Length: 389
Image (cartoon, rainbow, N blue to C red; front, side):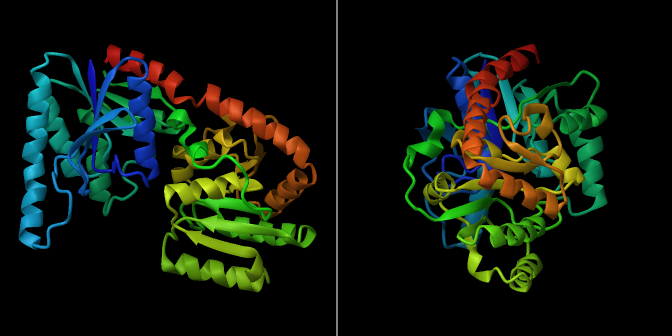
């Protein structure tokens, strides 16, 4: 069997990768390290050498452009040619006469339909990876309907990051489609700690990293909670890393920070390189994931959590979705109810006042990452699932 991970949500092998690409790395290495052949076919328009191997993972980029052409017409012709190049890639694999499994990473209907066509031509099993609501970026109710009632019927199986998404996929998939839950996954060789293993600063700070929004990520709750904590821990800072969901939210956050008189205590890091992000995590005193309770957060699973656990950092996270199925408050991290800034503040104070205890909990969190969220162990489960398809 040979597995081809295909999609336009992938930027592999670019190092400063989005969460979806990191998940692809974990999938691919989980398969390869357990003796299974796997290729990553990056269908997004990235400029890189088209063929190679990175972190032991063979990759192919059908755009075949190492730098951006200045000519608009040529650029778009190349984007069309990549469909032909992809077909040729599968043609070569077909000659090996080994069973092929096509694992799709996309929320673009035309790309999914093209992948479905490829699966029919080359008689591959057709699998969809669900790590968030698939129609999140849908521009209309019709596009959402297309996902639910047409695209979902094309797949032979679904790999879901949460029980919500597993139930969702079963609701709209064809009757014989199979499902498996694969939660957040560690990165191979603990890539995060390979950058720097020692604390570089004596400055203490609470870290949030990810998309910066109020309605989903609870940044307003975090800022309000920190303003309470800051009164008791005047040397503590709040570090916010990531991209604002929109300008309105950014302006609202800045206004909130000014109103709470904590301007000097809040640091905005913005989007960081992988190396800078790694150092920021390693030097953090406490990491926080204050997601609110929405359909989107219930369906998803915060991938940053596994980074924090791998670094043995104390983590406070709101109990949303499947978190409580894997984690226990006070054992391997700290759980709080969502959308309650006062509860969040009190938990922060408790952790900071009993930091030795928090460090023990963080060590247990690291064990949880190595055992339950291990890319290698989940790779074994994934192989068994794909064999049955």
